Length: 241
Image 1 (cartoon, rainbow, N blue to C red):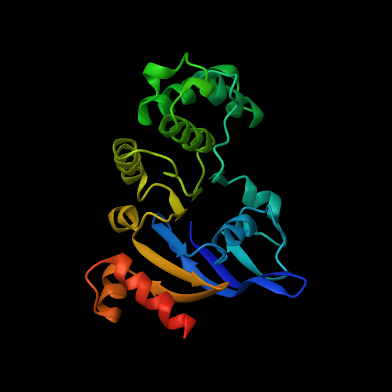
Image 2: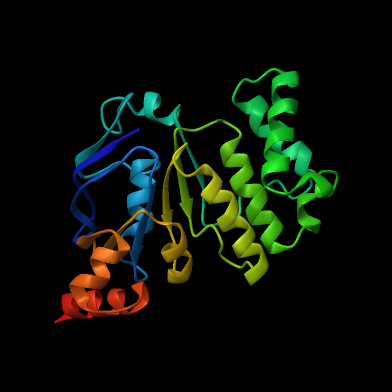
């Protein structure tokens, strides 16, 4: 599922949150969208998911575009948002069944797929626990598992490991690595170490614009730095000059 983003722009009166964003995201890759707070990352994700209407531009998916055929696009995507989106009074299993039934699965199909997701995300031992009793790390796992219940071709992860401890973060990295090549994943994160582990390519945004694009190795070579974090700091500092 290749995504072609063309001149994507979002304005709020005089403020331009995203300014003429243009790039291609390749099928099956894990693409990281990085930037400081208010760089335009979350606004971009919301436009690509159909949660915000662009002021200009478009994004083309295999099944349609976010401007001309948003309904078709929504059928092949899903998102795990920055805010952990689980029903606190439902169990892990009930949360997954609920999502399956919202999307029209039969009860048997929903149960089968919920079982698959619990096994993949290491939630089987917690399946009868109410979501509100889970640690923050397990709630984030559940949120991503719920997004995967629909078998999306494109998965958006907005700060997926926010609030996780080191072990939980590593566990989720391992799960996402299993999905690489099967699902196109677009991820935002402030944990640059995890991007070094996961991402095939990186786009760096600053003040609503794309200021760098390429593999981690390419970005480090261009800046002469030995880590993505140092390369990121150099590139965003240059943009501030």
